Amino acid sequence: MREALGAAAPDLLLLPFQDFPPDHVTGWRDGAPYANAQFRADILDWRRRLAAAAGTRFALFDTDTLRFAAALFGAWLAGKTVYLPSDALPDTCRALQAEVDGFIGDFEQQWRPLGAGESPLPAAGDDGSDDGAAWPPLPAAFAGLVVYTSGSTGRAQAIPKTLSQMVCEVATLEALFGPTLGRAEIVATVSHQHIYGLLFKVLWPIAAGRAVHAQSAFFPEDLKRIVPPRPWALLSSPAHLKRFPEQPTRPDAAQLRAVFSSGGPLPAEASRQTWQLFGHRPLEIYGSSETGGIAWRQPHHEPGLRRESWQTMPAVHVRTDAEGALEVRSPHLPDDAWFTMADRAEMNEDGFILRGRADRIVKLEEKRISLDQIERLLAAGPLVAEARVLVHEGKRGRAFIAAFAVPTAAGHALLARHGKPALNAALRALLAGAVEGIALPRLWRYLDAMPVNAQGKITVAALAALLEPPSPPSPSPQRPTMPEVTELLRTGEEARLSLRVPENLLYFEGHFPGSPILPGVVQTDWALALGRRCFALPPRFLGVAALKFQRVITPGATVTLELQYDAAKAALSFRLHSGSGQHASGRFLLGPQ
Image 1 (tube, rainbow, N blue to C red):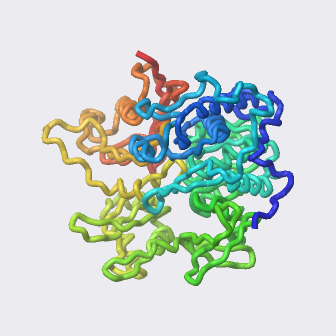
Image 2: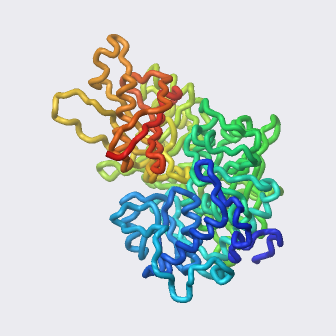
Image 3: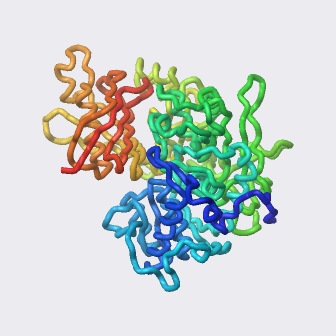
């Protein structure tokens, strides 16, 4: 079953970077090279610290990819299993506390995280030297990693991975895409705290000797800044690729070698726009946290050519069961048994086509309802660009369908002219002829973009949070000075918030009579105040840079605030945008008291 995947593929177990010369560039941080000699030293530092630490299970979270990689390999050399949370939020840490013996990296001090750079006594038999004895081969059967499902179908589940599984994945990726990349450097918009980012942004490039950029490019401005004047490849997700064509900031794609996308289906229009923007057809990767990579495709966009089927990766076998669910057998799995996916598929001569989730049939009042069908019908109409639906339980325990939609330009126009009831009615009418009455959504939420986590995944929890009732109004007669805030995403360095601007906001008074708009100074004040809620920012305000105001914000508007905190530079970047386009952006410069 575990066929050879090519002699040229690097063997991760042998730590191939130990044979690279000291001046080999492992990665780049803020434009400065990070050499292999320093990488090896950082790994050994982590090995010494962890070998002296009690316990065998450690949670690792670090937003810097190069620091993360050094800690990861150091932990494995010390015989520690690494748990990979998607964030370092308090609830996540509390859940991890019952599973791990310690924390490594960017965790709050209350979790007492271990840090690199200290100098404990070497473990027995460890003289701290960087020679052949310091780099023993890693054991193939060692369960060195525990990853978590994204939560897109409910509560996240822990999934152990042996090092041999990851060795097979790295060899597979190099066999498939290594010749295309050559020496291209890896630039990413996604986090390495997930199996997709871990493989494509850490294990594969480091094993193959490709330089990795330490910071992720969550915003288009970041991508333009990070892109090197050398060959590079973009590691991204549908959530990011769908946003790039709308932005005025464009990276230099002259030396781009490939664009990868994973984490969910990439809509055909987003794929076509990515091709137009970057000059490359995206390489889409299909898989899951449980299975690793399963298949890939690179759709055509020329007139008359249909989207290509998924092609299985080397040594991966697929079939469908009696219900049409996809089954997988792969060296990326822990054994040779067939694994049943939650996706339906149709096999053909070119591979297979996905036909929606097999587990998204629900029962309401004894009626079988396909959530996939409702989403497809909404997105097929002229008013909705993207849709998600879920079953929501009301106050009296009665379940019903709730819908979340990103309107098209036509949908936004209808919403602006006639309000939410008109758009609700139009979409219900679109569905009425195709689904049971009980399946018609009773709650609607219209968004500028779907809420996603750091891996670009739309999660049930994030959608359900949008249905929470707003806090009861204050009994104070004073007019509000802040927007109604809904958190869509928050990690250690990025946050996305939905802001509804109250019609009776105090700051509309006198600005301007008859045509009120939100003052720019209020927009910046909100961005900094909400940034302080999301991150532990330095207390002193030093100034604001690159401040731009492009579109006005009017009473009752709903806008999205995107924040990114760069702790190393003590800078908080913000961007306000909506379906109308970008409203404002800038960067706060901060410092100690």
